[in-house]
Amino acid sequence: MKTIAIIGAGAAGLMAAEVLSHADVRVRVYDAMPSVGRKFLMAGKGGMNISHAEDFSVFMTRYGTHQQNLAPYLNAFTPTDLRAWLSELGIETFVGSSGRIFPKEMKAAPLLRAWLHRLRSRGVQFSMRHRWLGWKNDEAQTLVFDAPNGEQIVTADAVILALGGGSWAKLGSTGEWVSILREKGIKVETLQPSNCGFNVAWSDYFKARFAGLPVKNVSLRFEDLEQKGELMLTENGIEGGLIYAASSRIRNTIFNMGTATIYLDLFPDKTAEELLKKLSKPRGKSSTAQFWRRQLGLDGVKAGLVREILSVDDLNSSELVVHTLKKFPVVLLSPRPLDEAISSAGGVCFDELNDDLTSKKLTGVFYAGEMLDWEAPTGGYLLTACLATGRAAGFSALKWLESCRPQ
Image 1: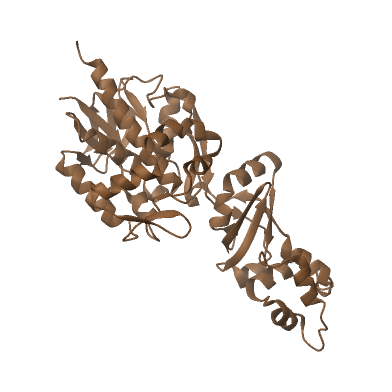
Image 2: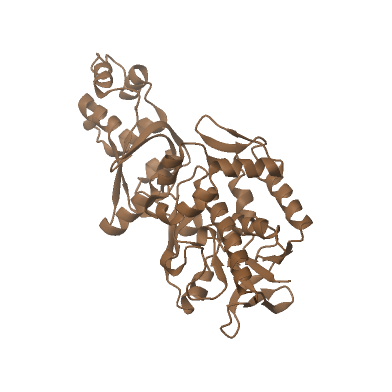
Protein backbone atom coordinates (compact mmCIF):
# COMPACT_ATOMS: atom_id res chain seq x y z
CA MET A 1 0.00 0.00 0.00
CA LYS A 2 1.29 3.46 -0.93
CA THR A 3 1.97 5.99 1.83
CA ILE A 4 1.23 9.69 1.67
CA ALA A 5 2.70 12.07 4.24
CA ILE A 6 0.84 15.32 4.94
CA ILE A 7 2.87 17.91 6.82
CA GLY A 8 0.57 20.35 8.57
CA ALA A 9 -2.61 19.53 10.52
CA GLY A 10 -4.51 22.71 9.72
CA ALA A 11 -7.52 23.15 7.44
CA ALA A 12 -5.64 22.45 4.19
CA GLY A 13 -3.82 19.41 5.52
CA LEU A 14 -6.97 17.92 7.03
CA MET A 15 -8.90 18.40 3.80
CA ALA A 16 -6.13 16.65 1.86
CA ALA A 17 -6.42 13.81 4.38
CA GLU A 18 -10.20 13.80 3.90
CA VAL A 19 -9.79 13.17 0.17
CA LEU A 20 -7.09 10.54 0.65
CA SER A 21 -9.04 8.71 3.37
CA HIS A 22 -11.43 7.44 0.69
CA ALA A 23 -8.62 5.79 -1.26
CA ASP A 24 -6.56 2.67 -0.82
CA VAL A 25 -3.51 4.51 0.55
CA ARG A 26 -1.89 4.92 3.95
CA VAL A 27 -2.27 8.49 5.21
CA ARG A 28 -0.22 10.00 8.02
CA VAL A 29 -0.47 13.64 9.10
CA TYR A 30 2.50 15.27 10.85
CA ASP A 31 2.44 18.51 12.84
CA ALA A 32 4.83 20.30 15.18
CA MET A 33 2.09 21.19 17.67
CA PRO A 34 0.74 18.92 20.43
CA SER A 35 -2.78 18.88 18.97
CA VAL A 36 -4.56 19.25 15.65
CA GLY A 37 -6.04 22.43 14.13
CA ARG A 38 -4.92 24.99 16.68
CA LYS A 39 -5.24 28.00 14.39
CA PHE A 40 -8.52 26.59 13.09
CA LEU A 41 -9.88 26.54 16.64
CA MET A 42 -8.59 30.03 17.44
CA ALA A 43 -10.18 31.43 14.27
CA GLY A 44 -13.52 30.07 15.44
CA LYS A 45 -13.31 31.40 18.96
CA GLY A 46 -15.53 34.41 18.32
CA GLY A 47 -17.88 32.62 15.92
CA MET A 48 -16.70 30.21 13.25
CA ASN A 49 -16.95 32.08 9.93
CA ILE A 50 -16.64 29.26 7.38
CA SER A 51 -17.27 31.01 4.09
CA HIS A 52 -19.36 33.68 2.38
CA ALA A 53 -22.63 33.37 0.47
CA GLU A 54 -22.28 36.34 -1.88
CA ASP A 55 -22.48 35.85 -5.65
CA PHE A 56 -19.57 33.62 -6.66
CA SER A 57 -18.24 36.10 -9.22
CA VAL A 58 -17.99 38.70 -6.42
CA PHE A 59 -16.59 36.06 -4.05
CA MET A 60 -13.70 35.41 -6.44
CA THR A 61 -12.70 39.09 -6.56
CA ARG A 62 -11.80 38.92 -2.85
CA TYR A 63 -8.62 37.09 -3.82
CA GLY A 64 -7.28 40.10 -5.69
CA THR A 65 -4.41 39.54 -8.06
CA HIS A 66 -4.32 35.80 -7.33
CA GLN A 67 -7.93 34.98 -8.13
CA GLN A 68 -6.91 33.40 -11.45
CA ASN A 69 -4.39 31.18 -9.64
CA LEU A 70 -7.03 29.98 -7.19
CA ALA A 71 -9.96 29.80 -9.60
CA PRO A 72 -9.56 26.10 -10.60
CA TYR A 73 -9.60 24.95 -6.98
CA LEU A 74 -12.40 27.26 -5.83
CA ASN A 75 -14.53 26.42 -8.86
CA ALA A 76 -14.18 22.76 -7.89
CA PHE A 77 -15.08 23.45 -4.24
CA THR A 78 -17.35 26.47 -3.97
CA PRO A 79 -18.91 27.85 -0.78
CA THR A 80 -22.05 25.88 -1.75
CA ASP A 81 -19.99 22.69 -2.01
CA LEU A 82 -18.40 23.47 1.34
CA ARG A 83 -21.80 23.77 3.01
CA ALA A 84 -22.90 20.47 1.45
CA TRP A 85 -19.73 18.77 2.71
CA LEU A 86 -20.29 20.10 6.22
CA SER A 87 -23.90 18.92 6.16
CA GLU A 88 -22.73 15.44 5.21
CA LEU A 89 -20.33 15.64 8.18
CA GLY A 90 -23.31 16.45 10.41
CA ILE A 91 -22.60 20.17 10.74
CA GLU A 92 -25.53 22.36 9.70
CA THR A 93 -24.83 25.93 8.62
CA PHE A 94 -26.67 29.22 8.15
CA VAL A 95 -26.08 32.50 6.36
CA GLY A 96 -25.87 35.55 8.62
CA SER A 97 -27.20 39.00 7.81
CA SER A 98 -23.77 40.00 6.46
CA GLY A 99 -23.72 37.07 4.05
CA ARG A 100 -21.15 35.19 6.10
CA ILE A 101 -21.65 31.46 6.58
CA PHE A 102 -21.51 29.97 10.08
CA PRO A 103 -22.15 26.57 11.66
CA LYS A 104 -25.35 26.65 13.69
CA GLU A 105 -23.39 26.04 16.87
CA MET A 106 -21.13 29.01 15.93
CA LYS A 107 -18.06 27.16 17.20
CA ALA A 108 -15.13 25.40 15.57
CA ALA A 109 -14.64 22.68 18.21
CA PRO A 110 -17.71 20.52 17.36
CA LEU A 111 -16.81 20.67 13.67
CA LEU A 112 -13.20 19.68 14.32
CA ARG A 113 -14.22 16.84 16.67
CA ALA A 114 -16.61 15.36 14.11
CA TRP A 115 -14.03 15.72 11.36
CA LEU A 116 -11.20 14.11 13.29
CA HIS A 117 -13.45 11.25 14.39
CA ARG A 118 -14.26 10.49 10.78
CA LEU A 119 -10.66 10.76 9.62
CA ARG A 120 -9.43 8.45 12.36
CA SER A 121 -12.22 5.97 11.69
CA ARG A 122 -11.00 5.80 8.09
CA GLY A 123 -7.47 5.02 9.17
CA VAL A 124 -5.79 8.43 9.00
CA GLN A 125 -2.96 8.52 11.54
CA PHE A 126 -1.62 11.61 13.29
CA SER A 127 1.93 12.18 14.51
CA MET A 128 2.01 15.26 16.70
CA ARG A 129 5.05 17.11 18.05
CA HIS A 130 6.84 16.27 14.81
CA ARG A 131 8.59 19.39 13.51
CA TRP A 132 9.62 19.06 9.89
CA LEU A 133 13.31 19.72 9.25
CA GLY A 134 13.44 19.05 5.51
CA TRP A 135 14.60 16.17 3.35
CA LYS A 136 17.38 13.66 3.84
CA ASN A 137 19.95 13.19 1.09
CA ASP A 138 17.95 15.40 -1.31
CA GLU A 139 15.32 12.69 -1.73
CA ALA A 140 11.87 14.29 -2.05
CA GLN A 141 10.12 11.35 -0.37
CA THR A 142 12.56 10.98 2.57
CA LEU A 143 11.53 13.37 5.33
CA VAL A 144 13.34 14.37 8.51
CA PHE A 145 11.45 15.34 11.66
CA ASP A 146 12.42 16.57 15.10
CA ALA A 147 10.23 14.16 17.10
CA PRO A 148 9.71 13.57 20.84
CA ASN A 149 12.26 10.73 20.75
CA GLY A 150 14.81 12.60 18.66
CA GLU A 151 15.37 12.83 14.94
CA GLN A 152 13.06 10.62 12.90
CA ILE A 153 13.36 9.66 9.23
CA VAL A 154 10.10 9.00 7.36
CA THR A 155 9.75 7.65 3.85
CA ALA A 156 6.59 8.32 1.85
CA ASP A 157 5.54 7.77 -1.75
CA ALA A 158 4.12 11.30 -1.98
CA VAL A 159 4.28 14.39 0.23
CA ILE A 160 1.72 17.16 0.70
CA LEU A 161 3.05 20.32 2.33
CA ALA A 162 0.34 22.32 4.12
CA LEU A 163 2.43 24.20 6.66
CA GLY A 164 0.43 27.42 6.86
CA GLY A 165 1.75 30.97 6.69
CA GLY A 166 3.75 32.95 9.22
CA SER A 167 1.19 34.53 11.56
CA TRP A 168 0.33 33.32 15.06
CA ALA A 169 3.55 31.36 15.55
CA LYS A 170 2.41 30.08 18.94
CA LEU A 171 -0.36 28.17 17.13
CA GLY A 172 2.08 26.55 14.72
CA SER A 173 2.35 28.90 11.73
CA THR A 174 6.01 29.75 12.18
CA GLY A 175 7.09 30.10 8.56
CA GLU A 176 10.20 28.02 9.27
CA TRP A 177 9.56 26.11 6.06
CA VAL A 178 10.55 29.17 3.97
CA SER A 179 14.29 28.62 4.43
CA ILE A 180 13.92 24.87 3.83
CA LEU A 181 12.27 25.42 0.46
CA ARG A 182 14.58 28.25 -0.58
CA GLU A 183 17.56 25.97 0.00
CA LYS A 184 15.97 23.66 -2.56
CA GLY A 185 15.77 26.48 -5.08
CA ILE A 186 12.04 27.02 -4.62
CA LYS A 187 10.99 30.62 -5.15
CA VAL A 188 9.14 31.86 -2.06
CA GLU A 189 7.83 35.39 -1.73
CA THR A 190 8.67 36.89 1.67
CA LEU A 191 5.88 36.40 4.20
CA GLN A 192 4.17 39.65 5.16
CA PRO A 193 1.33 40.54 7.53
CA SER A 194 -2.18 40.44 6.06
CA ASN A 195 -5.47 41.25 7.77
CA CYS A 196 -3.37 43.22 10.20
CA GLY A 197 -3.31 46.42 12.19
CA PHE A 198 -1.12 49.43 11.44
CA ASN A 199 1.01 51.79 13.49
CA VAL A 200 -0.16 55.38 13.99
CA ALA A 201 1.67 58.17 15.85
CA TRP A 202 -1.09 58.94 18.36
CA SER A 203 -0.29 61.50 21.06
CA ASP A 204 0.42 60.16 24.54
CA TYR A 205 -2.76 61.83 25.81
CA PHE A 206 -4.89 60.22 23.12
CA LYS A 207 -3.39 56.76 23.74
CA ALA A 208 -3.99 57.05 27.47
CA ARG A 209 -7.64 58.00 26.97
CA PHE A 210 -8.79 55.97 23.99
CA ALA A 211 -6.54 52.96 23.31
CA GLY A 212 -8.61 49.79 23.31
CA LEU A 213 -11.88 51.51 22.38
CA PRO A 214 -13.95 50.80 19.26
CA VAL A 215 -15.00 53.39 16.74
CA LYS A 216 -18.45 52.29 15.60
CA ASN A 217 -20.57 53.26 12.61
CA VAL A 218 -17.75 54.71 10.56
CA SER A 219 -16.88 54.59 6.88
CA LEU A 220 -13.33 54.07 5.62
CA ARG A 221 -12.08 55.28 2.25
CA PHE A 222 -8.75 54.32 0.73
CA GLU A 223 -8.15 54.78 -2.99
CA ASP A 224 -11.30 53.41 -4.68
CA LEU A 225 -12.28 51.27 -1.68
CA GLU A 226 -15.07 52.55 0.55
CA GLN A 227 -16.65 50.43 3.25
CA LYS A 228 -18.73 50.94 6.34
CA GLY A 229 -18.29 49.19 9.68
CA GLU A 230 -16.19 49.63 12.79
CA LEU A 231 -12.57 49.56 13.84
CA MET A 232 -10.50 49.51 17.01
CA LEU A 233 -8.02 52.05 18.32
CA THR A 234 -4.91 50.58 19.90
CA GLU A 235 -1.96 51.99 21.79
CA ASN A 236 0.15 51.52 18.69
CA GLY A 237 -2.37 52.45 16.04
CA ILE A 238 -5.51 51.02 14.52
CA GLU A 239 -6.99 47.62 13.63
CA GLY A 240 -10.33 45.88 13.05
CA GLY A 241 -12.55 44.67 10.24
CA LEU A 242 -12.50 47.88 8.21
CA ILE A 243 -8.72 48.03 8.32
CA TYR A 244 -8.32 44.34 7.50
CA ALA A 245 -10.43 44.72 4.37
CA ALA A 246 -7.93 47.23 2.98
CA SER A 247 -4.78 45.85 4.61
CA SER A 248 -3.14 44.45 1.46
CA ARG A 249 -3.52 47.74 -0.41
CA ILE A 250 -2.39 49.76 2.58
CA ARG A 251 0.65 47.53 3.16
CA ASN A 252 1.71 47.77 -0.48
CA THR A 253 1.28 51.56 -0.49
CA ILE A 254 3.44 51.90 2.62
CA PHE A 255 6.07 49.69 0.98
CA ASN A 256 6.12 51.88 -2.14
CA MET A 257 5.47 55.33 -0.65
CA GLY A 258 6.63 55.14 2.97
CA THR A 259 3.21 55.87 4.50
CA ALA A 260 -0.47 55.50 3.60
CA THR A 261 -3.33 57.82 4.51
CA ILE A 262 -6.85 56.53 5.00
CA TYR A 263 -9.91 58.73 5.48
CA LEU A 264 -12.68 58.07 7.95
CA ASP A 265 -16.20 59.43 7.78
CA LEU A 266 -17.19 59.57 11.44
CA PHE A 267 -20.83 60.40 10.56
CA PRO A 268 -21.51 58.31 7.42
CA ASP A 269 -25.28 58.64 7.79
CA LYS A 270 -25.23 62.45 7.81
CA THR A 271 -24.24 64.86 5.08
CA ALA A 272 -21.77 67.67 5.69
CA GLU A 273 -24.60 70.15 5.16
CA GLU A 274 -26.71 68.53 7.89
CA LEU A 275 -23.83 68.58 10.34
CA LEU A 276 -22.90 72.16 9.56
CA LYS A 277 -26.51 73.30 10.02
CA LYS A 278 -26.56 71.83 13.52
CA LEU A 279 -23.19 73.33 14.46
CA SER A 280 -24.21 76.74 13.14
CA LYS A 281 -26.82 77.13 15.86
CA PRO A 282 -26.10 79.55 18.72
CA ARG A 283 -23.86 77.96 21.35
CA GLY A 284 -24.80 80.25 24.23
CA LYS A 285 -22.85 79.45 27.38
CA SER A 286 -22.30 75.80 26.47
CA SER A 287 -18.76 74.47 26.33
CA THR A 288 -17.51 73.00 23.09
CA ALA A 289 -17.96 69.48 24.44
CA GLN A 290 -21.51 70.21 25.62
CA PHE A 291 -22.45 71.84 22.32
CA TRP A 292 -21.08 68.93 20.25
CA ARG A 293 -22.88 66.42 22.41
CA ARG A 294 -26.21 68.29 22.28
CA GLN A 295 -26.19 69.06 18.56
CA LEU A 296 -24.53 65.96 17.07
CA GLY A 297 -24.27 63.38 19.81
CA LEU A 298 -20.53 63.81 19.32
CA ASP A 299 -18.55 62.73 22.34
CA GLY A 300 -16.19 60.02 23.56
CA VAL A 301 -13.77 58.53 21.09
CA LYS A 302 -15.03 60.41 18.02
CA ALA A 303 -14.72 63.74 19.81
CA GLY A 304 -11.26 62.64 20.92
CA LEU A 305 -10.25 61.98 17.33
CA VAL A 306 -11.29 65.49 16.30
CA ARG A 307 -9.34 67.04 19.17
CA GLU A 308 -6.32 64.90 18.25
CA ILE A 309 -5.73 66.77 14.98
CA LEU A 310 -7.41 70.19 15.39
CA SER A 311 -5.95 73.03 17.43
CA VAL A 312 -7.98 74.85 20.09
CA ASP A 313 -8.62 77.70 17.66
CA ASP A 314 -9.67 75.26 14.90
CA LEU A 315 -12.29 73.75 17.21
CA ASN A 316 -14.18 77.05 17.03
CA SER A 317 -14.58 76.72 13.24
CA SER A 318 -17.72 74.75 12.45
CA GLU A 319 -16.55 74.30 8.87
CA LEU A 320 -13.22 72.77 9.96
CA VAL A 321 -14.90 70.50 12.50
CA VAL A 322 -17.41 69.22 9.93
CA HIS A 323 -14.69 68.70 7.33
CA THR A 324 -12.73 66.68 9.91
CA LEU A 325 -15.76 64.61 10.86
CA LYS A 326 -16.46 63.72 7.24
CA LYS A 327 -12.86 63.24 6.11
CA PHE A 328 -10.73 62.38 9.09
CA PRO A 329 -7.18 61.55 7.93
CA VAL A 330 -5.19 58.77 9.58
CA VAL A 331 -1.56 58.41 8.52
CA LEU A 332 -0.53 54.76 8.75
CA LEU A 333 3.20 54.37 9.25
CA SER A 334 3.81 50.61 9.06
CA PRO A 335 2.02 47.28 9.50
CA ARG A 336 2.04 45.64 12.89
CA PRO A 337 4.39 42.62 13.16
CA LEU A 338 3.62 39.48 11.17
CA ASP A 339 3.04 37.39 14.28
CA GLU A 340 0.15 39.69 15.30
CA ALA A 341 -1.58 39.41 11.92
CA ILE A 342 -4.60 37.20 11.31
CA SER A 343 -2.99 35.79 8.17
CA SER A 344 0.03 36.30 5.95
CA ALA A 345 0.73 37.25 2.36
CA GLY A 346 3.58 35.77 0.34
CA GLY A 347 4.60 32.14 0.12
CA VAL A 348 5.41 29.58 -2.57
CA CYS A 349 5.06 31.28 -5.97
CA PHE A 350 2.49 29.77 -8.29
CA ASP A 351 5.03 29.62 -11.11
CA GLU A 352 6.81 26.98 -9.01
CA LEU A 353 3.73 24.76 -9.36
CA ASN A 354 2.01 22.82 -12.05
CA ASP A 355 -1.74 23.31 -12.40
CA ASP A 356 -2.36 20.34 -10.10
CA LEU A 357 -0.33 21.92 -7.27
CA THR A 358 2.64 19.62 -7.81
CA SER A 359 6.12 21.04 -7.41
CA LYS A 360 7.98 21.55 -10.68
CA LYS A 361 11.31 20.92 -8.95
CA LEU A 362 10.50 18.26 -6.35
CA THR A 363 9.00 15.03 -7.66
CA GLY A 364 5.94 13.82 -5.78
CA VAL A 365 5.64 16.96 -3.63
CA PHE A 366 2.40 18.98 -3.51
CA TYR A 367 1.54 22.32 -1.86
CA ALA A 368 -1.70 23.53 -0.30
CA GLY A 369 -3.19 26.22 1.89
CA GLU A 370 -1.81 29.47 3.20
CA MET A 371 1.81 28.60 2.40
CA LEU A 372 0.98 29.42 -1.24
CA ASP A 373 1.42 33.01 -2.42
CA TRP A 374 -2.10 34.44 -2.06
CA GLU A 375 -4.09 36.41 0.48
CA ALA A 376 -7.69 37.33 1.16
CA PRO A 377 -9.69 39.39 3.65
CA THR A 378 -11.50 37.89 6.61
CA GLY A 379 -15.06 36.76 5.98
CA GLY A 380 -14.54 33.06 5.30
CA TYR A 381 -12.39 33.60 2.22
CA LEU A 382 -9.18 32.40 3.91
CA LEU A 383 -10.68 29.14 5.17
CA THR A 384 -12.50 28.36 1.91
CA ALA A 385 -9.33 28.68 -0.17
CA CYS A 386 -7.30 26.61 2.30
CA LEU A 387 -9.89 23.83 2.13
CA ALA A 388 -10.17 24.06 -1.66
CA THR A 389 -6.43 23.84 -2.26
CA GLY A 390 -6.07 21.06 0.30
CA ARG A 391 -8.78 19.11 -1.50
CA ALA A 392 -7.09 19.71 -4.87
CA ALA A 393 -3.71 18.59 -3.54
CA GLY A 394 -5.26 15.39 -2.19
CA PHE A 395 -6.81 14.48 -5.54
CA SER A 396 -3.62 15.41 -7.40
CA ALA A 397 -1.51 13.20 -5.13
CA LEU A 398 -3.80 10.25 -5.80
CA LYS A 399 -3.67 10.83 -9.54
CA TRP A 400 0.11 11.11 -9.47
CA LEU A 401 0.48 7.86 -7.51
CA GLU A 402 -1.79 6.11 -9.99
CA SER A 403 0.38 7.31 -12.88
CA CYS A 404 3.48 5.92 -11.11
CA ARG A 405 2.11 2.40 -10.86
CA PRO A 406 3.65 -0.15 -13.20
CA GLN A 407 1.45 -0.96 -16.16
